[in-house]
View 1: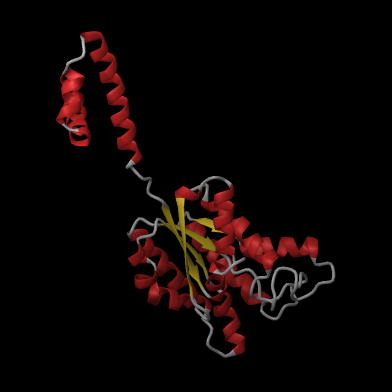
View 2: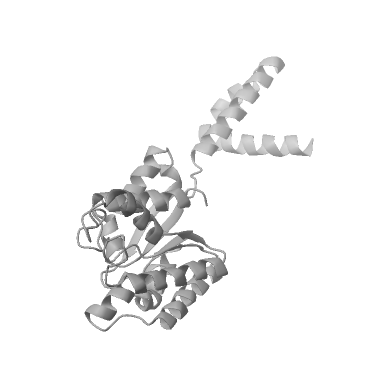
Amino acid sequence: MILELGLWDLEFGIWNFLFGHSVLGCFFSLNCDKHIYMKLFFFSLVVMLTASFVTQKKTRVIFFGDSITQAGVNAGGYIMRIDSLCKAEGKAGNYEFIGAGISGNKVYDLYLRMENDVLAKNPDVVLIYIGVNDVWHKASSGTGTDADKFDKFYQAIIDKLKTMNIKVILCTPAAIGEKTDFSNPQDGDMNEYSNIIRRIASKNNLTLVDLRKAFLDYNLKNNSSNKDRGILTTDRVHLNPAGNQLVADEMWGVIKKL
């Protein structure tokens, strides 16, 4: 009885607010049977009107990385392709995708800018896609990141995200060269740093998108000439359309399961 009165009071208040006293006067002048049916009708109408004002909170996903991620927000980029996959599955209202990539970034750059570029945006999920420059720049300019420092900075990023109850997805760096016989100059370091990320994912019980493995598997099937580029990358590192689609497929497959 108390619940019935409470719902009636809520209905009465909302109806009075929406339609005013004149309609209510007509409503109460009805005989008993009609009164009951009209009351049920009006209550259902109020419920539907109330529900229409309630919007579902979208899951905010931030992609945190370097130039590969910076390009991901461009037409045909992997983030835009994830958005397309999301829409194709009828889930556009459930997700918001944000790119936070800066060209040349290494793991310690991510740590230094995460407050403004990630935490301030209140994400629900963060994908960390970093490591190429930490390896590549060691050889090209002597400004890469030693393996032990890479491990510590990476873990520090995760620790900070976890204190904010943000879900974290890790990604291994895909490629610096696409040859499948491990004759690309940086293959040794790429494998080492990918193994660091795999260990960090396992230690922290985090989801891993193993792009290093995905790229190698794809090239083993589609790169019979053992080319160093042109299969998934334009220049051994940055993604061509096929590379963007592969990354999008791998990431979306994980995101939608969280």
